Image (cartoon, rainbow, N blue to C red):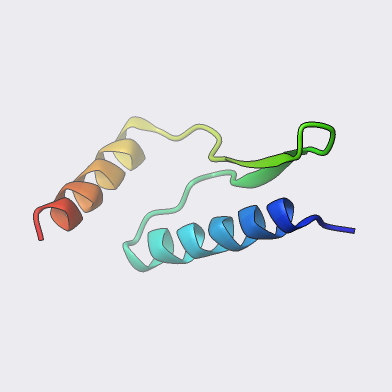
Length: 66
């Protein structure tokens, strides 16, 4: 059964994936890794190519400039 931390991480991952998709960016792997004993969950973004990293940086820069 998912904990509140893992549910929070899953929701954040889904929101990030939707935002990236809307910006035309797709990361090859995004998953949630939990550590129940420590009580946390992390969103693992995986690896991406240089063009995807540049596209991601451009989207972030445009958003930061607003």
